[in-house]
Image 1 (cartoon, one colour):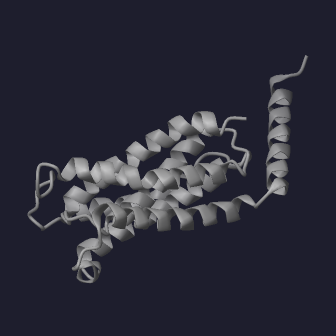
Image 2 (cartoon, one colour):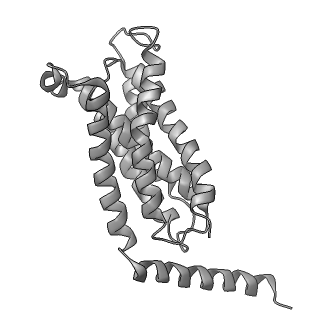
Length: 215
């Protein structure tokens, strides 16, 4: 009878061989992830413009501090999410480096703590919150599909965790894209509801990844 240690070694060896097989069969994992992220962000931006149009004041908005804060926070979270996805997609990835999310989370929280806009946490109107959440989730879905497809180039031994990481990355890309149309610049609004939107996509990613990334 094999010992518990021998069984663990066998599983690791098989996982490593599976990852090698995936890498040889097609595009390398890192390249596939980078390509998926680039296409996902472009698609999210196009979807935002299709759903909300292009504001006449867009260029002026983009030069403003609130817009730059929203985008910088979301992209920093996306950068951390990329490292989580890359780690979770490998059979030898070890524990997920969740600290990679810290810079983006801190910047987002800092905007909420120092918010001097006077805007309420529920936004400018009664539909601000549902529009924000629906928009972030909607424009993140193509990104989630692309990133999960890229993760399949690897050989994750933790499909649910890999799906959650893919969802965090996708949701952050969606939040960055939605900043182009968002009318609520209050730091507290952004800190709360962008976070909720990203977490909803992360939960969807976990549910999808549990099945789509199992092998």
